Image (cartoon, rainbow, N blue to C red):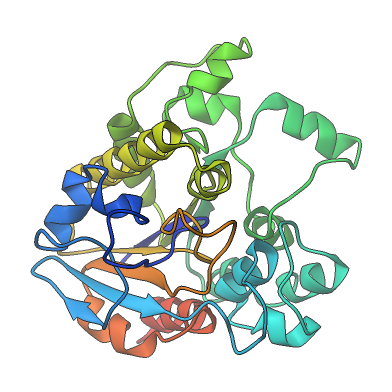
Length: 301
């Protein structure tokens, strides 16, 4: 029963207030349909016809605002990384967090159980050039893949539709001269779902949600949320939800509250779609529960 994990940086569950929460004002028809017409706002665990929304604690019992490196490390290992190092830290993992990521992250644990795993993001040639010079910065997500020996996808994979860019439509790649096709966000989601059929666990990372929160520009926020919604629509187009699961989650709040300058203390959404959501949802309370829940789900006899 394959799992496709969609990780969106900086997406929290905000107030039911259109003055501060763009999730109430930007049309997101795919997401709204999954939530039976309601917006993704702060509240209780909720069951819908096609999805389950679990408000998930990102503070991890540590004072201060949640940050990307500790939040992502926690998501992909099940270790409370903020507590382990005594603070929230971001955006990139330091040596202590890399040590945590290098030991039993989700890719490693599933590979050890003979599950097929994939990291779906495509990286441009300059990233591989920087890797060769030992100067590439890696998110906690990409470091987890590296530590597990999971292959980074490249421009050839992107051309073949066997990877998805973090910029989704490839427009930014083309602007820098790359010979790749311009696609829609929905097509990118379809490519992602088709790739996920070949693996037991597939992960895709999207960071523009956090970038939009930091920029606080309404036009860019609207663009990003529309792209997210169309990406999700494409994933649903090509997913057999009777036989697979989609897990959408985030590392900390940001985009959902335009009145805040930076990250928030809000819970993040863990949105579960498809097979097994009734058994997955009750296990998730904080970011530290996500990897153990997925591993248990995929390795259950």
